[in-house]
Length: 546
Image (cartoon, rainbow, N blue to C red):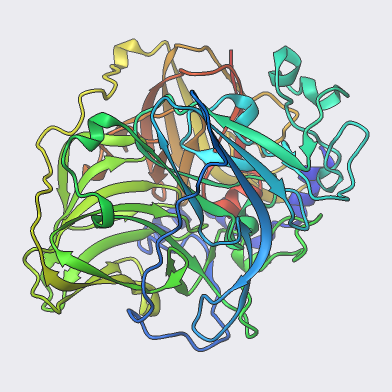
């Protein structure tokens, strides 16, 4: 067993053994507590009342150059302090000095190159979640952006991960079954790294975040997350709410220590060598403060008109079931117009909307029927106490509204049929034994992640059906591709399952079928659970596109 796997096992304690032994009986119990795959940290500071802090909107990043065919950006990853809770300073790891990081606005089919420089104390990796991206820019977990002075092996590997290096940037050795792992030319560390995103994909809201092997969860928790929005002319011609009535909302839970710092139960708070969290939190880390765009339970002033809410669950492990409720208890419709990978074919009305970690939903809420001065709360039906509130909207004026939600939103969704699939694959996402004498961990198909192993090989252009099954909550994310959900538990998909997805939320004990065509690029990619603690403790697998 590689050293990295042995160290990961040491981070996973008896709690997982109980889950593995309990099997679907434990899953059945968790299904009655649908936000509870994980344990909640309690903040050690007084928390502010809800709906007093104004909602911040992430700044849009300006390109350093605009060429005839490409836009270029630069981001410095650095530590900073900011006032998240009123009156307290909190140290953050950031993209460009802000949390969330700056938003990149781009156009469909116009490539973007982002140069990242790392001034943090540990290596990082950048992944554009939902991006249809060449393998060398996808953010494989060992393709590191290293800070100055970080020790590396002779082959460029990160000594904090047992000496393992990444997949390199080209050719069969670079993208094969660990070929680059022993290739001295496959240097995978750099003080700066260029990520090129062709953006030949449907318009949607993506997000970028850290993806370093073993340490993704604490790095995102500390602030390494930002938004990337792709637009095109066809979407803009629909007449959807726009400008100040289009709101990107990054929802994330956190907890705070007595000194105002972010509390997280890392075994190694330096994030240098020993991965994992203390035993009570191995199923996932939940915070007791709900942040939206980095502010606790914020409030936003709105016109009495339609607004487009572009929702992202950037929490490590917390699930939400969102509901918009007026002060007199009336529920406003959440009109879903898009999913992870862009617009639906037609709008779908929801009273409540479940959102798992890493999922994005594009919804329209109409405030026209709310009186001026009225408050609309966005609440989490899966929360309790302070985690039941998310944010609020204060209607401050009547206003003209020429926006609309057309009955036909998009005609370019794929229409793959079961008969198109050339193969069907089965994957289980479960706690289990890492080895005969090595304790328990989070596994895909009975195996923990190993960057030296080739797990699945698919052919470019093939349509495949994947059947997934879970023990507890597992939001399963596939890199490179979008997919459609065919079924859940042998039944029809749920009302919110429509459109093109890149993350499917498996509930405890649940199975699901998804269908996709592998398009875009050859190379080595990943699929994994996006409960970030599960991901760090083994629940990833390698995917080779040939």
